Length: 97
Image: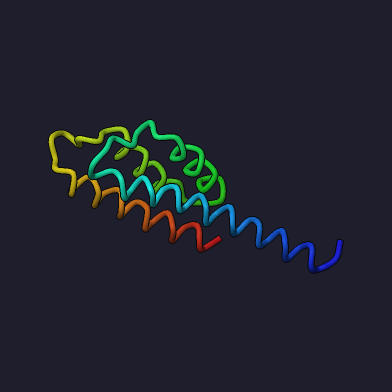
């Protein structure tokens, strides 16, 4: 296997990570107006990204927040803020790898 193949694999892996993050960002953008708990394209990217990271707590926090879209009566903005904070931490732990 030559170096160009390895670079291509790395590029493909980065592309998969970027697509997974985009799926979570899409859920974040929609969460103020719709229930995204069972939306296709959220759990698979979340699982994929979690496998890439050593730290698991941001993924658990993201899931927990998704599980309760009303967050015990809080407003959609508060729900968005917790998801956003979780996603920012996910991005940090993914970019450390």
